[in-house]
Image (cartoon, rainbow, N blue to C red; front, side):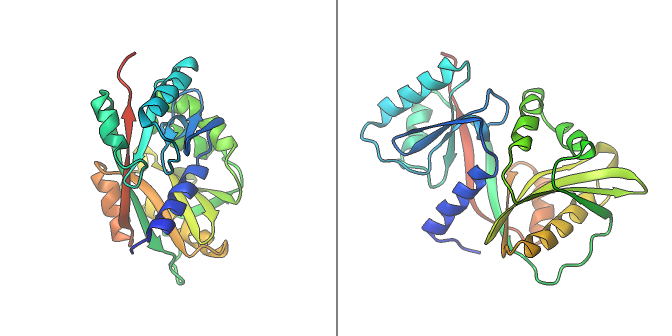
Length: 250
């Protein structure tokens, strides 16, 4: 599936809205996002637009804003970031490149087989969902995630897959037709390779269709070969990528 430049930018903007920060600050087309640490997406500069005249000065100002809040300056670099040489400018300043991630999409199927495991849907995140999802995160992300999850916009749906009363896997659907985002996919350690992720994705796709979405998107770390294989096997295709640039110590 190929996306035109405008459609691709709109999808990146939808992905940003699907994980809202606590605070934003607009500067020269960029959006600085602050959430007190943890999530990189909610604590980095979104660089999809640029209308400034001095890139180096804008980087300096962003660094001051993050450090004034006790946070490390982080830029999210998308393969359509602006200005086009921003990644090279940050590399020249000593910024490390972290967590290259693929953006993958697929059409929503009109006829979707029922999931192999029982899947429950929830308007808000139940304890079982939080327990499984938070267990997969680093300590700093684990501390920040509940507040972000609680502030997610509607329409959304939390999915919990299980067997014989045992919770096995979770996911989150964020509908913004024609797109629906697939977020927070996680499987309990004892339930790995038991079909939980497939069950969640199957019911999430059914829900997306019910919301009027015609396409799914998700983001997966490039190095996560098992997850990529699962998604590719279900029909997802990579249409772009992003990564983070972390500032060196001040």
